Length: 276
Image 1 (tube, one colour):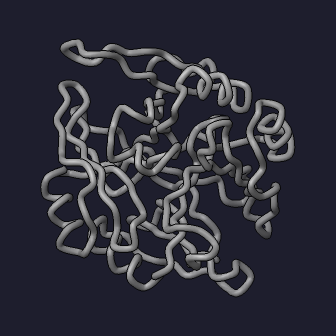
Image 2 (image 1 turned 180 degrees about the vertical axis):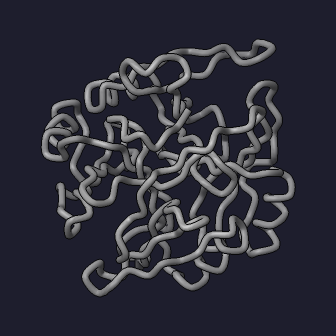
């Protein structure tokens, strides 16, 4: 289960790069009930999405020349510079070097061996996400990669992740769950998926895909479409897992929706992020 306890290697931040900030605010506010908190001049316009006063992610405007619209998943590191060296030693590359964001923390961006982008957040004043695992918040993350064993080895070297192959309910293959080192079976926060396993995902190339919990997957998909987004993978139900679907916002940033089979536990931080 994804938590906000500050475990090394866990997803502790997500952010959206979008060419249409106003449209993105309207879309995600309508879909998840998020509120937008603009950043001050010192943040370069970087803002926060919040749910019930707790941070669920960040958002920044990007141009088509800079990057395509997308969600990025960041993982917690106690030392960004050490992690950056580990990425290079494991065969990945540094997209942007560790950078201090005021007194909030340190951020860096990388690509793994297969070219999937991921980020890093080393907390200072801002510990990370304020809520996970409830409707409208991050609850899971998947890596679509051409070589699952190679990806497991890479992220194991960088973050110390452990992996476990779990049979699908009813047979028909297995799924590789990822979790922090020493976290135990209940600490899984995501999975590794062969890139060619899902045609809709293969088109995008190697990438991380964030999952957001919803109260009703079919209703959420309908709302995505009503708000101008699109469906990229039809809702599917899996015993013991839940009902999930892949979608994209109006600018093309892709993410997944899931109504978990088991009610997710609420994970809240006791502190608010500083005002930006």
